[in-house]
Length: 324
Image (cartoon, rainbow, N blue to C red; front, side, top):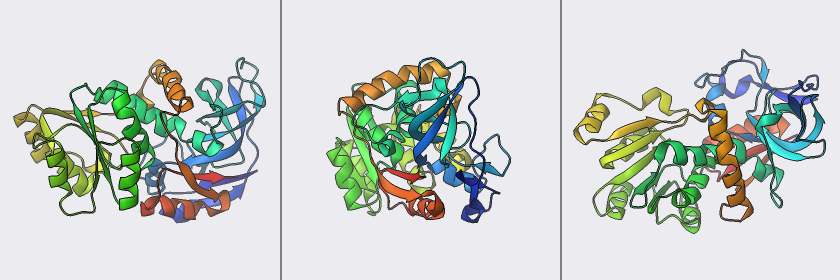
């Protein structure tokens, strides 16, 4: 079968399309004929050695995939061949076939494409769990969503009010993206390419600052967002970039002097039962049409480098995915 392997940590040139043997499922696993494999920003960081995984190159890339179950292990009961599923994969999703633990497989709701379903395991569940377990927005609070037109951001904009926030302020990088997040329910959508975006956010909060900052951008946007935090506010830090340059003495001093708090979030560190508790409600919201899914940037496996270039350009909206 065809697969995309990472042969080192030298950026895009380390990606190779190769022929390898089809994986076989272990007793607790399923074999999926992959129809769509999502590309995540963490995987882009992985290419340069900035995101750690417990594997040594070469290995097949891809954290998640959606497709049709072809075979089930001897200890698998609830899933049958022919079922449509999405989930975290064991053998790498950038391939024609992938294995996954049956316990991590999520049934695809009716009317949802494989590409759309590929957004659920990491982007969707990350957003839902981040809000539920880390941010915990209250009915009187405002929340600032960075990279609001990205994969996780689109979920966050839609879920923030459902999970308790009063006011959603969304940062996006173009007029098209601003219009989209407004359509999805953001109370205020701000183009961070405009020089006065910080003043716009401050005005949206009537000068009091933001109660919750969802920090994924890092860099100057992250630094300015941090300064927008209200007294007794909290910043939830997630995303691969934030591991490297989120904190310094000035920010620690700000937290102390303003009675603020910083919370880290990493979905792989959640307990299985915590993740499992999020799945039914998220699927219900998707099935009911209260959460829309975005996946329109499709590339074949052989164009994996172009797919990553598109993701890194920040011109895409929602999911970039591969099709075998």
